[in-house]
Image 1 (cartoon, rainbow, N blue to C red):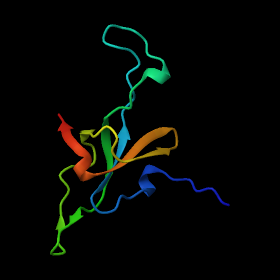
Image 2: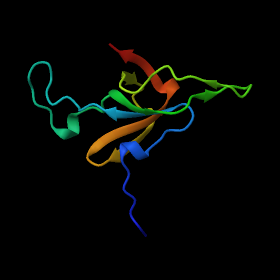
Image 3: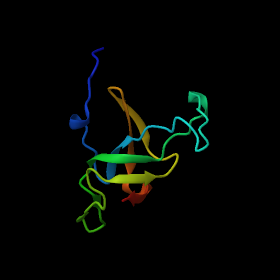
Image 4: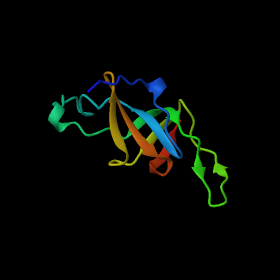
Length: 103
């Protein structure tokens, strides 16, 4: 079986899906205590790196995406599918799983 090497530029989300690069987990608490890997929580913030074409409405038209490449977003804790491309972590989610954009 041949191995397939994927990169961010070769992954194109379909429909209303978005590919988000996950931000690094916090290394220490606000009080300065270093956290071991087992105590770190999965980050819910990331940067949009690819977007799909948009959601298809009942009449066949395509609704434009509200987020764009480069946006910092906050997404649901257990949403999407985790993907590892190279050494970076990504999550593939639906637009409805995005809770907010960060300024």
